[in-house]
Length: 450
Image (cartoon, rainbow, N blue to C red):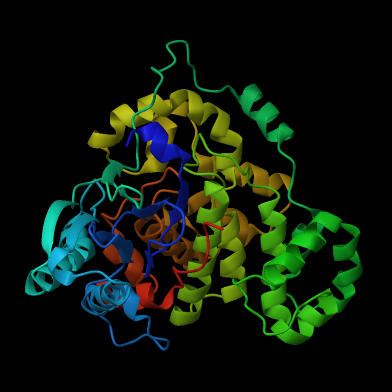
């Protein structure tokens, strides 16, 4: 089937720690893989197949709510059993494996952890024991990959997430001047006032959500998005929520505050593909996942307030919204530099555009009069040791950003240097051995693709 024919199929994204079997009309099952490992398995004769998206090689034993599909040793047997129950003959099953990347520049710590490599090895051992033929394997390397399974033809494809650009570099491109950046910042619509008000008061005990309710309803767009989030699978209430007051009773103040800020940020990030975003809404989806991860890391370490960490995670990449138009023009240069990466994405931005998204994000934070702690996270989330006001919060968001780039690959352009990961973990009193425990605690199945 041609790429154009594939493009006509509905694309179902398989979240990390889950699988999907082919059902209904032909579809293109897709797993976006960084450190994760994807496995497509199918029985052409029976017309049965599916796609599995794994995070880790084996259970850590530390997760309070065990998710067996997260792991190769437990998720792959469940997937195979589901295929058998759907009518597949194990003797006819064939498998394709992809993912498990290491991101350049590869550090000693990356090699020692080798999460993707160990997950791949565990999966291969199981498939060999079950005598299931592995017809293709593309794992490791320094670039995330997309694994697709066409349920009409049972054809698979493994393609780099960081794709070559169609256009040549703009020969007349010049880094934006201060005046151009000022104009670009001025064109950005600020996040709604209700969100700014909540952000400024979030660490104080001088407000009540009941007092904020009238202000929420004034902005009908925000109000509708808040109620949609309240009734989504993201929250999953047992009873229908039709008012802010009812949401407060059922969800509690902290979670409702999170949803209000989340709804407001949704209106800020551009919901399009291209530039930094590798898929529609990629900037927002990445930031939402970083926010969730930061909240969990903050709670796990006890080093900073989880609600503040959530908000900081949502806002950490706001500078990309301003620089997006310039990134589009320089993307061919980024692609040419990709195999030779040193430093991280922020350093390459500075080389090509003269400024990075952290600096521009700080300018937006100052323009909106955000709290100093949040402005500092936005400015130093790639280099958290440079933070002076709340270094713990900045380190939490750095780690959340790093893990999200590993396990929610393919939604935006990003890579983060891990050469100093051990010292950055130590700033939170963490060790590399605790990373799998943290990865276990983060709900990667949350529907960021919705």
